[in-house]
Image (cartoon, rainbow, N blue to C red; front, side, top):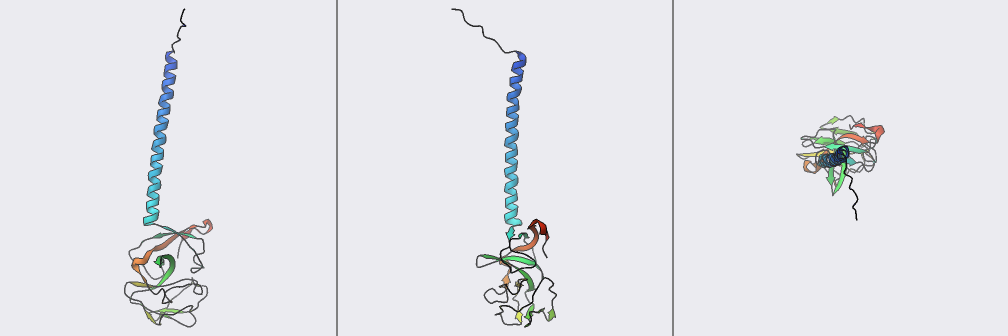
Length: 193
């Protein structure tokens, strides 16, 4: 019995097959590298978003017309908070958003018509659509304790805030951060004031 002759591949065929294998290896290396970079970037973005600049969703109408239900806002921790800053803070495991009206050592008074004075001076509140004294159970004038903040919602008729003894003044350790930038809805992207 005579055996069949074995056909050996040509040098060109061997080189072509070798190039194919090298291309597969290079593709796999680039793919693994790309996936690794994407995972690292995603992890870094999550860490930054959670720890440094959390994004919050506004729920409710306490800050209307400045903020609306469903807005997404980027926040940032600050060394100091000033009058007029809009902050997010925890109250009974709930995240609330209000505007700082007065700081520790200030005296706040609210008239029957809802006009607010700080240290005897009326404050300008162009962000308030309808002034009202609202659900005010604190004794006025109210002296803000040291290292605390007197906060009010911009929608005074709907907001539960420092006017109510249930909430009172807010301590700095409860503050998540200052609201910086609206990222949703697209039509309202921009800074928060």
